[in-house]
Amino acid sequence: MIGEVLGRRAVKGANPATAEFLCPFIKTRCPKRSTNLPNEPYPVCTLWKNGPANNPEEDLIFVCPKRFYAVDFLTEVIEHCWPGDKPNNPQIAREVKMAGFGNVDFVIADVKDDNEIDQFLSVELQAIDITGSAFPAYQALRAAQDLEKRPTYNFNWDNVYKRYVTQLIRKGYFHHHWKSKIVAVIPEQVYQYILGRAAFMKTADVKNDPQVNIIFMTYRLENDPSRPGEYRPRLVTVEGTSHTNLQNAILYKEPPQRDAFTTQIKSSLVRGAVKLADLISAGEIPKDLEDHGDEASV
Image 1 (tube, helix red, strand yellow):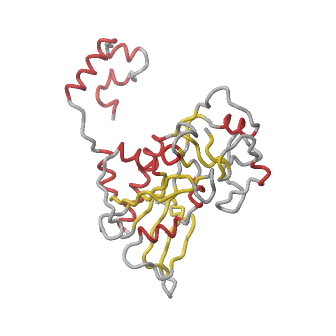
Image 2: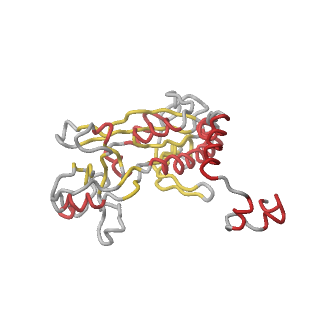
Image 3: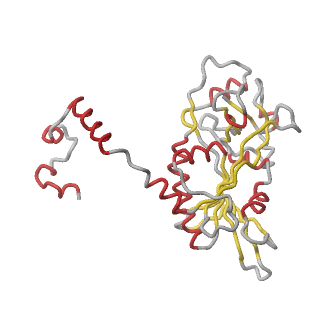
């Protein structure tokens, strides 16, 4: 269900239009969009995984990266991730793009007196998207109505794992050659999911370990004592790894036993073995395979 709208706890009858859809974190109109709302923003910041009766530190998850702006995460990057001495003249570049590299949200650069770049760190923000839609819950919230059934959405964990982690490996490789690091600012729940899928080697010594070129800096939402009933992000984990460690953990998982796989083969054959000629006649395999053997697969 909806956790927050425009940075405030979601309550029945909430109408973000009265605040002109102004995001309190970036001080401008909410940039989030939905195909269901062609003429106005879709200002949903967070969603509950299991419901608002649960612990926000476990169940309330960022679905908009602008939610990180509630804290000074760039200062915390310098504090916790900058290698060596603090930068003398840190300057922030936004949306740095380069052919063959893609883009990063921010680069913190230590700029020398002659305007040359000394050390730098790249920073990427990553929330999580969803499958299905939470839009019916948003509609009901604004109309101060109860939903007849829970909306059919889920968090798209696989997309983060397959797409975002793959991008981090590639960008970590580039930063390795540049003798720099990239910092992934992500929800703690997303980081724990990645660890569950890929048990890579990691270290808390992100500043001094020369092998570290990818740093995970994670946040979770907790009750905000200064705003009763509201939530605030809190830094939880700062850990680093290398692009090779992350890549190897994903590609070279311990394989299942051969006997287990042959058991599955036999089970599939029992359900219905087929002949090659039948697959060809059904069009599932090109006719060329019958005539030219292995050449058809080249």
